[in-house]
Image 1 (cartoon, rainbow, N blue to C red):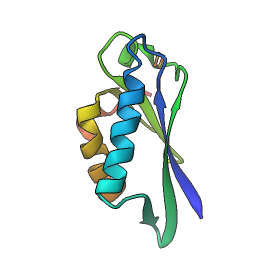
Image 2: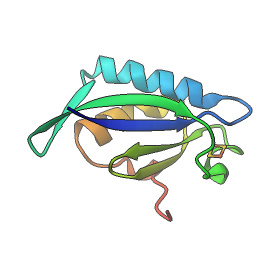
Image 3: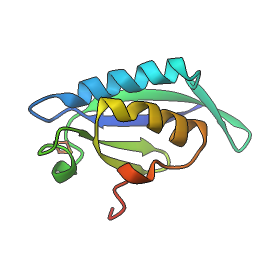
Image 4: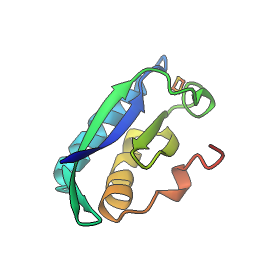
Length: 106
Ligand code: FES
């Protein structure tokens, strides 16, 4: 089984990334999306905090965190814990990005 990784930067002074990661894990469980099916194949979903993702203007200075989802390579910025439900439902459940949080210049 392959894995969809959600890497959340936790290099802000506030360490809000830790709270975002925690909220994502709670939502994955609540929405029953600890695994998803893509193109007929089952993928486990995994949330991890990490250090700087080099998107600091969308992370370090704001009150939210940068995060990237692989293997798609979709980037989100200024993600707050309250955004976790939308990311899990729309990105993982409905398989489309959450437009309002997308970092589209990458
Ligand atoms: S501090 Fe989060 S991306 Fe650099």
